[in-house]
Image 1 (cartoon, rainbow, N blue to C red):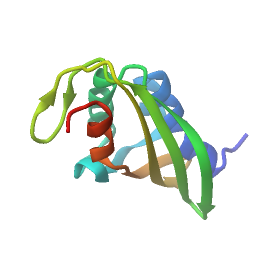
Image 2: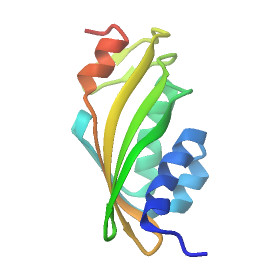
Image 3: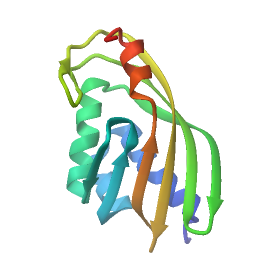
Length: 139
């Protein structure tokens, strides 16, 4: 059964929720571009994407996103999500490493996902890094 662009766009988040990195590699294009606006970090390629997401999973192993709303226009899907988890591992930021605080985070975010040939070809994720830092007590 063919998947809709919405199904394809959601699949990468569902794989991240499970920390199933092999599944991430199956559902995104090999040359995927991930633009993490909140950290000003952009990576290209599925392995770089997985490495980036593994860093977040080290800092917040129980992190999961829930879907709040979805909008689609052609092959572009906009996902509004809420990330929740606990800061139980080191968080690497552009300027320093923040030791685990055990504190919970709840962060609203938006992903703009471009889909082609049944795979995610790009993700722009918008979130407020200051909110994370405030919630874990780093500011």
